[in-house]
Amino acid sequence: MSRIFSGVKPTGHLTLGNYLGALRRWVEVDQHRADALFSVVDLHALTMEHDPARVRRLSRQAATLLLAVGLDPERCTVFVQSHVGEHTRLSYLLECTAMDGELRRMIQYKEKGAQARAAGQSVRLSLLTYPVLMAADILAYGTDEVPVGEDQTQHVELARDLAVRFNQRYGHTFTVPKATHPTVAARVMDLQDPTSKMGKSHDSGAGIVYLLDDPDQVRRKVMRARTDSGTEVSYDREASPGVANLLEVLAACAGGEPGELAGGYGSYGALKRDVADAVVEVLRPVQKRHAELAADGAYVDGVMREGAARAREMARPRVDAAHAAIGLLPG
Ligand code: TYM
Image (cartoon, rainbow, N blue to C red; front, side, top):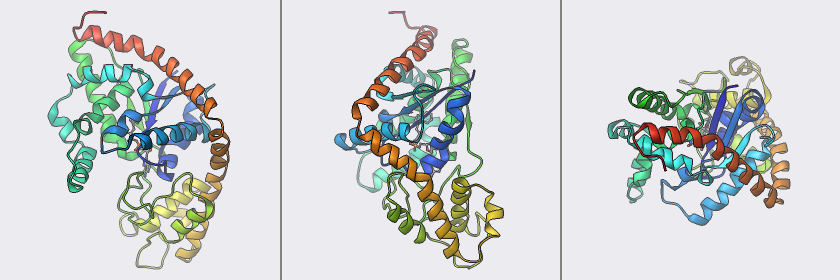
């Protein structure tokens, strides 16, 4: 059975982009066809200025949402990254395998580093080493597949490079993983700025649909989505990115192909109404289940505790092997 690992970082409230690009596939496909692990990767939320209480709150909320969207602890392992020490133990070994130059080339490092500098903040060293920790998340479990949105491709490539390099130098230790993406909505764009990704930590929330937005908020955000100066509804990511994004969201939520759906609309208003309805329907059961689970924090904590124990057992032998292979004495 193949092994799958993926994660979400608690740097903000989870978005429709997270759901359509990643979470939904974990629930509907991945947990049924593979030995899968899904993690709230909280250590990754410490790479930029952060408020400890907020990270704690968002981590619990993300854990609750992973269960609310339908991850089943009987079928897969759900856990919080910082509860499993193997990730950081392996990360250092991989830091000794990675090169400074390849990390400085990472797009997210460049973008987020620039963002921090523009806000007058210094850049944390962990922002640079973040993709190495992500590689450790993946490689610790002998992962074959990493289901992610398109924005994570470069990071998964680095994990592949590090696995190959480590294996060549120190003997076969790691499986070489590959990224997989959804066929539609692999990159959901911000509704107000359809040339940039809908991201949790974007400055204004106006173009971001959060999984816990109520129906009125969803409708307002979708109806105000930036479209293009034309009036014709056509699927063209280059010429009409705003409309193309809405068509992709509609296809992902209600079915169909974005290009074919376009033919059914004579106006942007009608398209937006259908997108809003489709998103509200997709979020309704998630929000209902979230409310139930949020009222039972002890259950969610218990699932995370058991998940961490399982994950630790799965990761330890491979991380021990890497420890020995690189030249460290066994403890
Ligand atoms: P994060 O927390 O930014 O996003 C979690 C998942 O959601 C996907 N995603 C999107 N997909 C489509 N459209 C969007 N607008 C959109 N925004 C986010 C992301 O591609 C991702 O799949 N570095 C990772 C977390 C991570 C991880 C890992 C993932 C840490 N270790 C190991 C996989 C394996 C991140 O920042 O995801």
